[in-house]
Length: 114
Length: 114
Image (cartoon, rainbow over all chains, first blue to last red; front, side, top):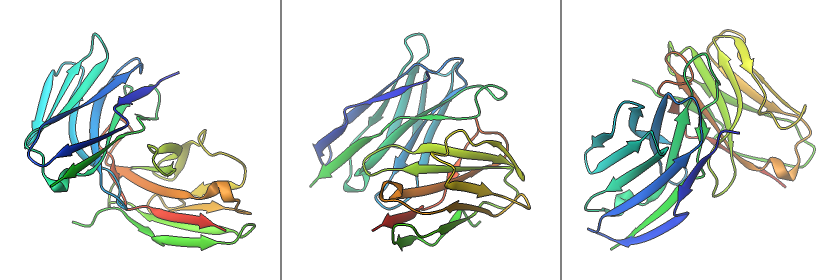
């Protein structure tokens, strides 16, 4: 069964600090991996998307890495801001023609304190 | 441009009532998805449409759940005889092409069954 595991489940950091969120997956075959940010009461918004041939992708202060061999990804947030407080969800997809269903992780809840 | 919209944003139903949740995808998007998100969890797949065809409904938890997209644009998720365990946020997402591509989420409908 395809699975996506995220850690930690929750994280509290001080404003200005960096943090790294982890995602391990068993989805196979693999097409792409996305990180979403979900603010409370809103739908998820895409941060990055990587195919199996990409090792890293940046979007402002967000940098995602991917190791397709070990099936691990991380999302690094630099110089955190209060607005970074949200849930971060890792999503892994199979190739078109394979499973239609992207597999979602449960998310990491990040709280940034002033 | 307009994003994915959902209505109502909040719905309170008494146990046993029927509810209908609406999703307006981004214009021109072929694929449409429904997800159920329990508190503190990641989205769980319910069903997937490509145009008006419902290609996958394996995630619908029971025969009380029914979804349609008759003209290939607006979709309705109907829940009959609601039960307390149906309380969740129901997210709709659309993508321009297939399910492995970028999905754009609506804000969700929070359903509370009392």
